[in-house]
Amino acid sequence: MNSELYFIGIDGGGTKCRVILQDKSGTQLGEGISGPANIMRDAELAKTSILDGVEKAIKSANTLLASQNSDAPVTPITLSQCVVAAGLAGANISTAKARFENWAHPFHSLHILSDLHAACVGAHNGKPGAVIIVGTGSAGTVFNKGKFTDLGGHGFPVGDFASGAWLGLKAIQHTLLCIDDIRSPDGLSKKVCAQLGTNTADDIVAKCAGFNTHHYASLVPCMLPLLREGNSQVVRIFKEGAEYLETMAQRLLGDNAYNLALIGGLSNVYVPYFSENTRTRLKACELSPEQGAIKYAQALYDDQ
Image 1 (spheres, rainbow, N blue to C red):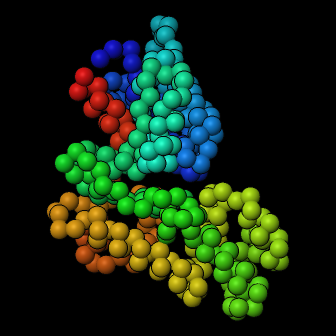
Image 2 (image 1 turned 135 degrees about the vertical axis):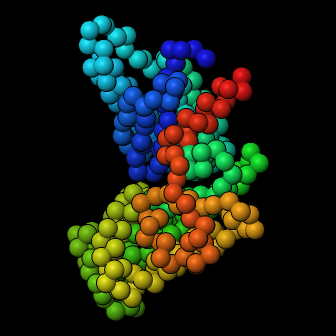
Image 3 (image 1 turned 180 degrees about the vertical axis):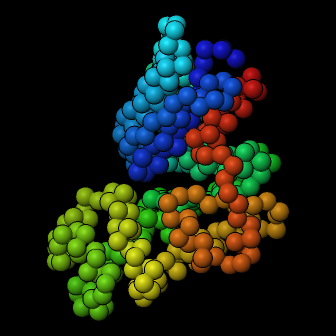
């Protein structure tokens, strides 16, 4: 392996990209955060986010190397030296992945896998295991005998049940029912109206016409205090999401002995609703999705 190559791992979701830069020995030198990177929803935005995140990681790495070698000039790391492994939302859709792989990128090489697969490789450090991601979107996979078997991940609004986007949509639907006097107004409908800055159905529908997944997911923070207070509608929505995730977990684990890792901003919120059997199989992630992406790319180089 070229000693001047550096590995970049990306965890690119529907809301933001997390990027890390490592040298060939696995030492992390830099990191960066940028915007959304769902290649099925907006491939051009994903490219912009990836470049922005990578450039930030390189800049931080070059700053660190310069500080560590203040007595001698250091050759800056460049884009062309970077082996980029990107776990991206939307890469589970084969057509979206194929189109994105035609990108005339400036890197040494680019390896694309889904954010779900990168998370699974990282969570179990390359060993067999299952993972469920529940953040802006949701999906599950199990890695066994060198193969991934996916569940969910079909994209919002037709899929991504229990996700932040799904929760926000459910909250807006409930609010519209309250405005139409089909349900009684409550704390949730009042919170949603306050968050959206309107209490009319026409305005809400007009606002939602321009919403992306992260707009819907942005309503979740106003739902969580109501969940803790026991608001009946919010509890009902979260229980519906938990039932879906519990069924997914059972399908992924089956009769196998491996464990399940939960990833995403909403994962801990759902844990209390899981069955005892599922909770006993939960384990902390060994590596981050960004590290999992790098591990995936390094394995490709080791096989060469």
